[in-house]
Image (cartoon, rainbow, N blue to C red; front, side, top):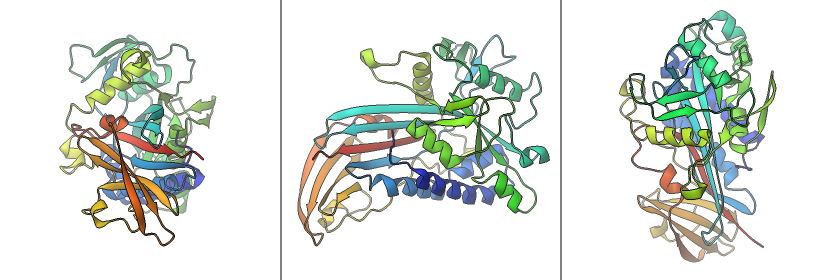
Length: 383
């Protein structure tokens, strides 16, 4: 997935994340999470991705969406080895990708997810050398239970809320076919500072939000952009226990190709939950950003009706003489092919209509809590 997401894109996102995070250095955990995914940050991160996606050679990325997933206080796991119901995390990444031919026929689809347990620290020792689980790991505390869950993944039942009496999923066993350490969840850490920034802070927290595997005393030394790159591409990152994947693939299809593993079922359940419950206004305010808008790639000299009022289209340039672009509507999408002469004048357009596929899932207008969903549509160009 996302072969165009290279080291340059990752580096740009690291810089963007540092610049955004340091503005809110005095805030607590939940406020820092909400500020991290501000509208300006999302737009800049989206533009950094699209800058490569639109020039990916013979395969053109036509659409990409980045949204925030907030799952604090929902859902909870309950297990015999946990002293109480325990959160699965504070945030979640979903990555979807669908490859289609120029006629709209699907070639392949892919989906990945990773849970994130966020922590903010003002402890001097952790600021100097951040290690999992960031907060003191005292038996019986929430921090202790969280690490126990994310590190060992015992068999558990899933509950929507801490006060839920009936479980949503029973007997979930993510360890089947896998061995520890597990890649399903990672720690996401940031400093909380009451003094001025200095060079040592940026040295230890170069992307402000840093990540580490769910392993006790694991260093949180992976930058945010590098983590996102490894997640979307299905790459592994180096940890104290060896190389480890970031998250895992899952399937939410229907019929015989539907969810089969417990990880599939868990991801599908979380997708449904985040569309069901409203986001907390006390943390995110009333104006929740649902998704980042695409960067305004020039549409050459297309007729005015094709791009007014802006934005209706998400365009991908294939070469100097043509390209593809999508119009997204509430009911689905329409794909167009455009051809140009050497001066950039339109030589004609052709509408290709295809039924919505991943777009119906990822751009659902029913979502009350936005989810981080990175979605792209690729058009395969054959010689």
